[in-house]
Image (cartoon, rainbow, N blue to C red; front, side, top):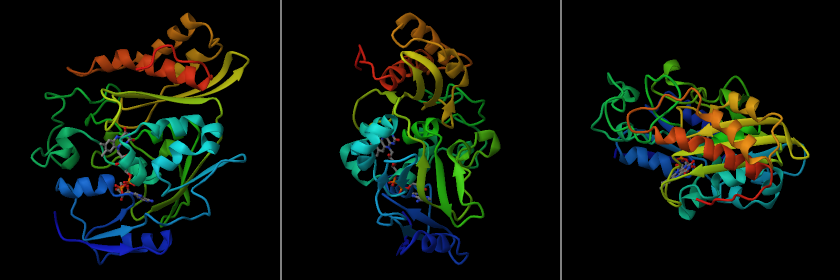
Length: 331
Ligand SMILES: Cc1cc2nc3c(=O)[nH]c(=O)nc-3n(C[C@H](O)[C@H](O)[C@H](O)COP(=O)(O)OP(=O)(O)OC[C@H]3O[C@@H](n4cnc5c(N)ncnc54)[C@H](O)[C@@H]3O)c2cc1C
């Protein structure tokens, strides 16, 4: 790990000035530091300054979820999101997306903005020894190599999956990230990420020097999130699904579906949204049939076809949670 200085920012504006200051070779924002410190230790980044924003707030409360708009501070921790009674009522998918993410210790330190901007977990990317596409190398080693946890959607050329649980949940709630240090003051979450063909070295479209201050989204009382993991703690999902519904009685009149851990970006599933429209959530057969469409268009690699089978299950369970129905099978 290289030597670096730590700057304590007094405000997000302050932080963006340091990050944009050309006198540093690389100044980076540090929030909870969970991913950033890993990247430093893995030798993947070598900043000369870390700008600590962990204690900054742009508003008074970490979460405001009482009116027409939900507001979450950038530095709100995953633990605060998971345990907020207001959020559990106004937008259950958000709380559910992080309640079992990582471990209690990680959730107490990890922040909302840091979760959205964490780098992928691909073992070739994370291993200094592999000069993969993402690090400027010639090839994506996952294509011929170990690809159990890689993408089943997206056409490469890099086959990472986006690791954030919060991102698909925010996606179905039509979220916007608010920023300082850039020309535009905000970026809808659907435009926060780009596919590898639009730039393989990064995942986000956040302008250089921009700092996220807070996130807003619409309440979605009928929303749910379901992740399938190999183990229930200290792990990332192998597939995840976030769903927001509008219901007329038991009938779905509108559905927004976004999958996680299956593509290089949070993967919107319009075909599933269409298939779910008009489905009675108490009709198990119709619901399963609509959710099966989550597998359509998947292009599994040599070791990850199991994800194609799991994704419709995650979608169906997220729909049932969103509709306030009991899950018959707990994983
Ligand atoms: C064992 C383990 C299991 C995990 N499982 C899961 C899981 O299941 N699901 C999941 O989603 N995550 C999981 N994680 C990842 C973890 O949630 C993230 O690493 C964490 O949320 C990152 O947040 P942070 O505040 O620590 O960010 P940092 O590490 O401080 O920062 C991450 C990135 O975000 C940038 N950044 C942070 N804040 C801002 C800001 N305000 N503006 C601009 N840029 C900013 C930083 O510069 C850096 O590039 C797991 C981690 C571990 C260690």
